[in-house]
Image 1 (spheres, helix red, strand yellow):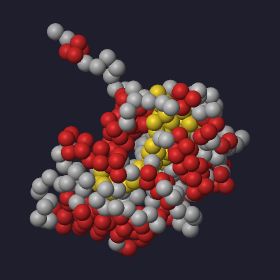
Image 2: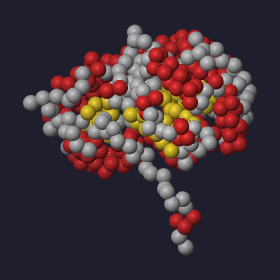
Image 3: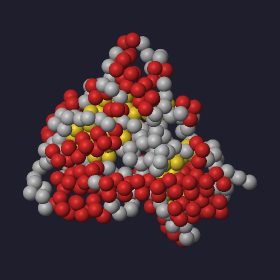
Image 4: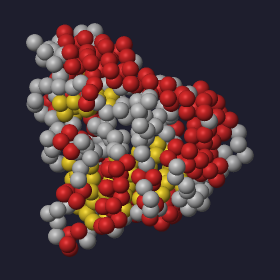
Amino acid sequence: MSIERVLNQKPTPVFFTDAIRQKLATALPSLTERSLLPIRLDRGAPREERFLDITEKLKEGVDLPQANIYSEPSGELFYRQAISHFMNSRYGVSLNVDSEVMAIPGSNSAIFRVIEKVLKPGKILLPVPGYPAYFDAAKSAGHEIIPLNLNASNNYQPDLDLAIRSLTDAERNQLIAIVINYPNNPTGRGASKQYLEHVADFAKKNDILILSDMAYADIYKPGSEKPHSILEISGAKDFAVEYHSLSKSYSITGDRAGFLVGNELILGRLRNLIARMDISNMPVAVQHAAAFALTDQSSLDWVRDKNAEYDSRRVALVDGLARLGWNVDMKTQPESGFYVWVENPKGENSEIFTDGLMDNTGVITVPANPFFDEFAGPEKGFVRLSLMEAEEKIVEACERLSRLGYNFSK
């Protein structure tokens, strides 16, 4: 008997982070022998310890009377109130805590579930390059993907009317949703409020849902304009939901903390889905810590200080690569997120380039391929580097590149 007979014939492909880990495991003995311990510029999540006060709030939360029972599928009232306070103070957005706010254990699974389970099959507009989960969820649900090409020529803010210009009226009627991701992964680019108004006008005109992924909302250059929420646009709650994650900004990826705000019908559908699939939501102790993170000034100050660190690391990396002849400079770098998105200087397949970089230098980066899925684009040869290593490690990485064959300035 072969158990394969009962399996889905379209197996889930290996996620790009797992693929990198597998390749690194193979390369590690050789790298170690050559004293090239890996420098991980591939990681998309902080590795530093969380803010100590958040840790203390987690411990404190474990002793709450309701901490050992199922949480309400929408989250505890105190957490929803903290979310509402944060959205109002940060973006000027007023929300009904009973119907327009809910807890989610990080944004990834909630994005997947809305695309896969809540929406009816149809045509969905996805950013390309974009986070691979968008593609996976859309394909799993049987949606037809319409790519939105993000690149330097359109300032990573594509004209949506142009994107669907070739569709017939009947095909336009099959549009169901658009996913936007600003600050963006992998490019790090943000969106102006004017562009978000364009997105809102487009959604209203075509009667579709906006799914706004703001996992990197709190990561931006000190002193620069804060990223904008789609819900700042008047009337957007009628056709938009927005995902926020505390994972990246507060270095609590393993605690799985986030929230969803916006259209009450979508939130209601997702709440009922969570009640059936998971029974509960975020652990109460995590909600207790997350509420503190969103409302206490000391926690917000900690995020501001981390952003200053990321900015310093970005300068070190971009200036270092520029000295090596890579096509990158600080003048064109985004002021949000913690990624550097750069054309690989060899002009070859992005995965071949990053594999060579790993094998020859021990500097680990992410190829563009996973962010394009099956689609093409002018930046499919690019590479994503993150700012998750300390500044001295970033400097060391640039020195290795110079010494081991990746200096193109000569």
